[in-house]
Length: 477
Ligand SMILES: [Ca+2]
Ligand SMILES: [Ca+2]
Ligand SMILES: [Ca+2]
Image (cartoon, rainbow, N blue to C red):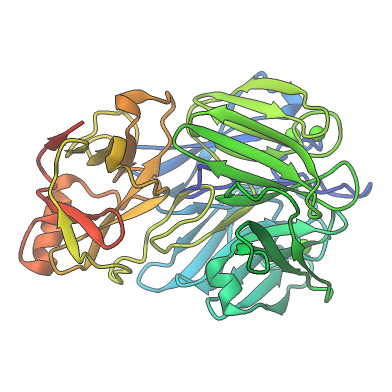
């Protein structure tokens, strides 16, 4: 998954790799050119909301970037991966099927057709990019609020003629772990993935807190324990990193306004490496370079800085600007996205929070009705929060009408140049996580549902910023 990326609803995400059986298919998830190494995948949302995909392949020594194709729309989550038997990676998206609350999974085949299947609902968290039975083909899973996890092995591969049979499995966790934990993918043998939840808990009444976990796979293996050490750090995201052999490692990714920290540990807690960079960065994982095993990479603008956890070797690779797509994506269409890239937001109409008090637009808060950037954000509102007005929220924030009905959303974007606009946090309508409406469309939507064109933006606790006239500039930073 990507981090900070914890982004988008388009949400996109990040990746992993598997060990390759000699007969097969590249299991390296984001391997598009079939050289068994991961490639860098980036999307650029266009003004009309379409997504253009680009790949910077390992096979050409990361020296060129090519356009893949246009597929998906703002508001979709990205699910690139090895979805079919005998194929290299393919691009795909998860969206909410129009007029329903069902999740629609769609992946492009090499022939250009689209293989799709409905699986899960908007109230579920979905998991893409994991291989639960270790056959090299990616499987889908959904996490239900009641603690049930449904694994759908070969969900899409089975729809292709001559493909393997699909099979479903059910794993059960307590609803507390699901609601309070960070979901993560992990393999005990480097091949077959399982799913777990990580929670920061107090140790036997003592003050210090550590991460505890519970993990299961479809072969009835269960692991429980705690991550030794690391009592101070708080992770936003926990992502698997293939070690050179045997069990996975885990990358704990922590993003703050002034730096991004990645700590790679074994499940037993042994620290393999810790790296931090200034500013908020997207983090992706893949087997990009030698030696064997996966690397992680910080993305800044067009540059991916690749770091091997064991050797510490660093290499910089240039791609294109855009949102990095990782193959492991754990996300939902709700209002509080977790990881990777942004978050989608198609579940409008079921406000998850309501404004109990209001904060007027003041210094440190700036609403611009029309962003002047030239991508999908252009001509649509952006909210800037500076200094003490920041909330730390990443992903999507909700916009309500005066009755507390959710009518739109804004998506958080990591800035390519950290520190821009006084180091403000930026939230866009035309960015993953955002609803894509213009200022006047937002005003109309609010007017239709509440009789008033004013809107209120989710802020801290149950306090909202507003009233705001979405079609005019207000505030200053
Ligand atoms: Ca490759
Ligand atoms: Ca599989
Ligand atoms: Ca490697």
